Amino acid sequence: MQVVRGIPTQADRPAVLTIGNFDGVHRGHQALLKLLTDKARALGLPAVVLTFEPHPREYFAPADAPARLASMREKLLLLEACGVDRVHVCRFDKAFAAQPASGFIDDFLVRGLAVRHLFIGDDFCFGARRQGNFAMLQQAGLSHGFGVESMTTLSVAGERVSSSAVRDALATGDLDHAARLLGRPYSIAGRVVHGDKLGRQLGFPTANIQLKHRRPALAGVFAVRVEGLGERSIDGVANIGIRPTATDIPRPRLEVHLFDWSEPCYDAHLRVHFLHKLRDEQKFASLDALTAQIRRDAEAARAWLAQNPTPNSTGPEA
Image (cartoon, rainbow, N blue to C red; front, side, top):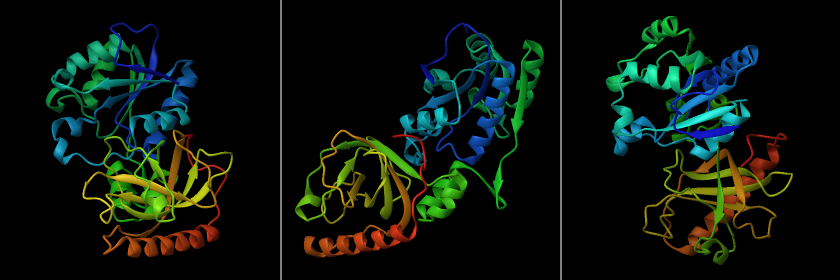
């Protein structure tokens, strides 16, 4: 899959396009991407996604923006797994936010991307002050010769599938519900970096997964399976949060104790699949009390994972 920063001034060939943030690439996104790729194959054209960085809500109200379900790297991996041929990552900044809806159509859709057919969600708006809508795109399509289709929101068991619904499920620890909306267990991928080695001192060495500037969508202690260290996934127990017993720095960390694994894995790219929540994060009176709880968590995670075997594959490569 080709990844392009920005939009060219003049496209070199037509494309079938969809537009959106695609945070988490949940089942609703997947259904939209299936329409995109099927149409692209039928027309013999590339299936193209236009997405934004940062998320528009992060630009307009950074303090109130929702937690991301996926980093940009993870989102691109998920889009590739859905059969997308090219992704344009457009920087959402002051100039982009001020772009009139008519300019968005003329400069980006018509000239920059040469859209032959466009798929959008039923709630899609665009342009300065969100003045552009489906009716405007339909009229532009008639004028410039491209088709426009909207996809109604997908529902699962009567619930609208959305990134917000996935976040709500993760925030409450309902991982089964989140997996139903996503079509797969929720996961976080990242590179293993050096930590403070506290887990090793306590007898439970951990792989520290780099979160960069990301605010996680979930917190607590979980039974997990980890991909990226060989052909098979590895069971483990993970803590994601601020480690209140060990530090006063409120910066989230993802630490995974891998069962029956003793090799170093620094710089490896791992994908951690969150399968079952054991408990919320809590502050203990001493490191001895913390160690005793980690031991209980590890035993509980082993027991749960033993009763719930893993399928062969649970997501894109890390």
